[in-house]
Length: 320
Image 1 (cartoon, rainbow, N blue to C red):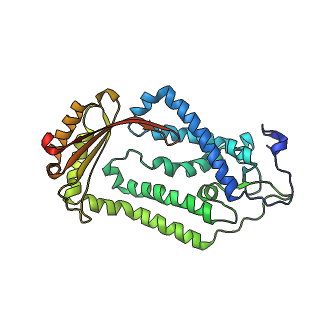
Image 2 (cartoon, rainbow, N blue to C red):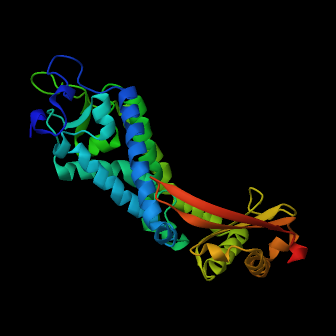
């Protein structure tokens, strides 16, 4: 498909001249911002339609958002001449290294590499998964991937090709001079060293987390969190407290419990008292704290759009 075949007006297609081909930082950032608004609006409409269903998915609604983002990425393919709405408005498009629009599979790959790290952040993986080999892969994809995407976009200034462009063999251009896109200079090795070091540290993060989780204080918190997560209507649970850097408990301070629930009607003081007593039973150090915070959250987070309602209750241990 040539530029004349895509559905946008011919007047919007940059003339084939000797102007610099690669899109600059601000145009790409502006296009990303506009596309984010479009995705957010669509996500908001989905939330209005099936918000209660999303709220009961316990964090897995993020993958609904990921599927929507993947579908949106099809606009970077030859179907629309490589232009999402943001790219269309700012006069840029996605192309392969010869300047031609890319195929649907390549557009999906590009969008998956761009989106996956951000949608994995906060996904509902349990401790056993996080401290396994899969946790190492997940950490590299999440922390290493997000860093590489942002770092290369900012500092790979010659072509602004980031991780998703490198994997998919694409670039973002303003125009294609006669003869195609200019030769793409190899990435400076220093960039690869920086990205590689961050990926290495990311791979080590699960082992450090496992070592920390093996301390008595964190073991007790994990056991209490498991009991909280098993309560009716609770789809996810989080418990935290103030501790010393060596993991030893701190007298005074707080214990904070957040429960993501699939039924907003259960968020009441009576239920909060029940949860508070469960905290004292499952995590005895809570008796030494000044305050116990119980927060109920009902809502969803698809990354592209989110909606939450929360209610917090404060108790002193002696009130429980």
